[in-house]
Image (cartoon, rainbow, N blue to C red; front, side):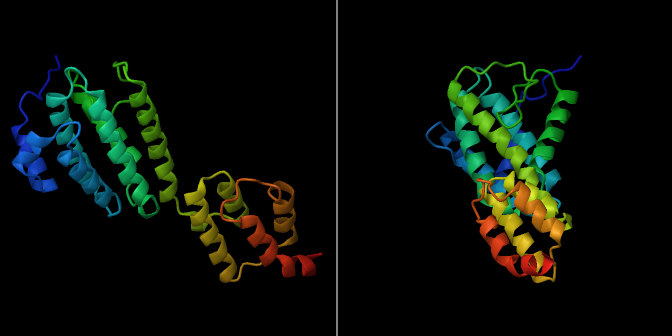
Length: 238
């Protein structure tokens, strides 16, 4: 029978103090309106997300923070603290999205699977709760923040794609389906292709004109750029 191994948090506290540069007072001061641990935790995670091969480190720290959460905030489940934690995580992830090197979504899925395999009597913190969690949120604000966090996780995966390998028409499609930040990234790749000697053919120009010329989701003015850069090619193609 599975049991709760989270009865004592001394080891987890020691590891978090060492890795996150915490003080023992941080654990006493951690309240809804004072969040030294949450702040240092999310800052540490954001730094690790822009380094290579840090998945194991991230999972280790979140494993031990999950233990602290289970001890301090699970009975009753502190959704207000959960909103604070999610706010910090969202802000940290948004700040470094273009520079991501780690698939944070996959890292959390793997950590969740680990807990699901080993434990049954634990209360998962907000970053691990999912549609399979048995707990029903009580605060609408918590559900809103959780949904925002989940969407951001999925969106973050888009920044790990090697868009340089995509064809020019695939890049057009991705661009017009994406948000402003991804559009900036895609436009720079398109410009790089042109600067390295890419010459559009009649099919490329017709394809763009037919599908995207009246597209409204164009924060980076790709349509204007396309018309301008292809003016000469358009003349000689026709």
